[in-house]
Amino acid sequence: MNSIETLPYLLEIRKVESIYKRVARLSHYVYEENQLEKRAEYLEELKFLLKGVKGTDSHLTIFNHKTYSPELEVGQVEFWGPLPDGTSQERMISILGLLHKDYATFPFESVDWFTTVLQKIPLKERTNLKIHHCGMRFMRTDNKLIRIFSQGMPLQNDAENNFTYTLNYVQNIHHLIKKDYPFYWIRLSYGSENQFVETFHSATKESSKNDLLTDREKEVLKLIAEDWETKEIAKHLFISINTVGNHRSNMIERLGVRDSTALVQLAKMSSMI
Picture 1 (cartoon, rainbow, N blue to C red):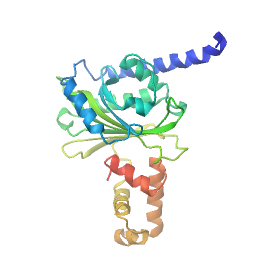
Picture 2 (picture 1 turned 180 degrees about the vertical axis):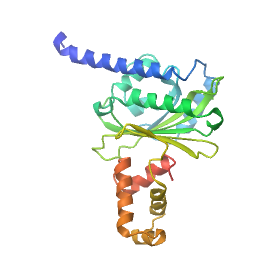
Picture 3 (picture 1 turned 60 degrees about the horizontal axis):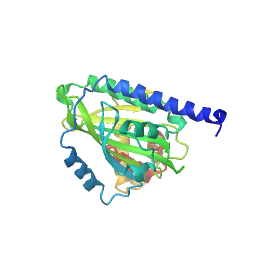
Picture 4 (picture 1 turned 30 degrees about the vertical axis):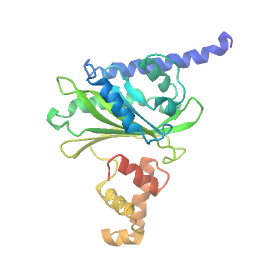
């Protein structure tokens, strides 16, 4: 490969490194340096949790929010494909390099949103916190297209009760999402009974205290999940059959799923129903 052919590749690598550095700077706004306790125990726990789960479909990480990189991880090679050797930060940069161009703003956009939202949550309400990211498109090192769903939960806090490490479960949900869906969304729930919600949808670039599904939509979806027929749902909720269909279509469009079955599955995974 001559120098002219190499230039676009080098420019892309520099772009990815720039994105990584920007995200890392954003994460410093909230998190302070701390060491992960019980490393060996956590690693064994991760290995145990991943048993019985197909490696190409999911992996588990303990994520360091100070360095914005995995501290411990299992199943990552099977999930992403072979990655260059190096530090965890260098591997994170390699993974960011697999991100589809339609989602180039996702890394810093999502971290900026999350750090902003977290600072607004009173310390006493930061209980049972869960964060779900959904829809990001990546191209594996073997050129296989995958869609990402992740769930993160706090694992260790610093002295100011900001969590410095999270346990992240990452799953390929390519079979659930529409092929041409160009967006991603985030759902954060917290409180003693996960009663509070903050959301972000890249279609609007807006943060909201409203959930991704309305209360009425959730009522409809719960009945769909219980295999109720459209006519039965309409009669039970005192709405028309067309209204039931409109609710279903709106939910499918907003979450980017392929059909009603995928809608139910993803809503359950992200704790919306």
